[in-house]
Image (tube, rainbow, N blue to C red; front, side, top):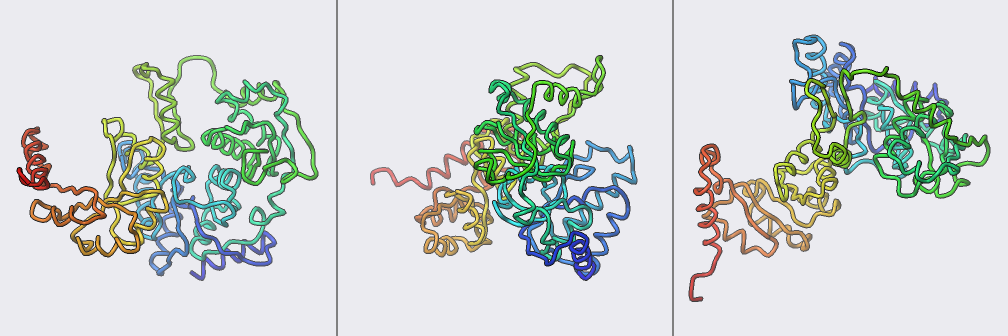
Length: 456
């Protein structure tokens, strides 16, 4: 911890900060493997008892822990083993293993005005600009040091004066039809980055209905082409309800058709001819972008022999798979911010799992009224449900885990129980052998237990 504190204090000295300020959240870039030093650093922290002071999420890794085939060990044994070790070490350190470069697509992250520490460039730009949280770009290992100490230098974009725009980019003269095109966000973001460099620009002319994936495109493009860590959009981003709120002095640059054409040329570096591959999802795709991709394909297939990859996070992928398999709703043994956001994005009704009163309250804050109590018996069973009914009378539950034909009526008699579930309804052997009638019969027997006797 002394090492982390020294790193943060030294950074404050370099940045001219007179004090350190508390942060509430961190997103680490140091979990992305580029050499053995990354492994040695986090291993040193763990061996010396370091603990995180704030909620800390992880950027994507060089490999996928969910699907090793995406980067086989045989391709580069040292890199694959090093990257895998590094990701597991950061899990041991106590991070939330989100493994995404687009953490702002997940629920439960920072809010307007929160001071945070982020290292991934597009996330820095999005959190500052679209969310209105406050962070400088904290590179490896300073991001980790901020997460360990819960502190950051009070300088740069953490301060009001550092968030004022220095350049006005005016796109209002462009035809509205152009500004409605998907590609416009990429072009204006690239153009803004080229003009602004590391300055803070404000853009006029974005439509108030600009979707979040377009704001993500602007954030990513501006960060890549110019190192922009904060940009404003008049009437769109939270700190710029009007131009005067963020821009008082500086130059105004009118955007022309030629500017957009040049940005298109800058971004189109490939020569004419056959494609070697198609790669999408940098930053990671959200479910909305997958839906738009499916719409654009319109039933067509990728040309045989042409590799096409789309990068996304685990939660988005799992929710998409469930919906595409025909699921009408989803249950989970627990609740992660990523699963919540993925469920919201795809419109799939979702019943998250909880076990403690704190988890129930957190689920309620996300807007859920029906929760899965799991594992119900280990959590306290009927006694736990009675205890929850007092302080949380509006919440309803689906107990699973230890529920059986012998006790399901005790659960269903509780006013805050909407339904019950149990693995006895779907024996593994019946599923493996396709004995669907056996499962139907078990469900009918369970239903009969809940019905009043004939004649009553």
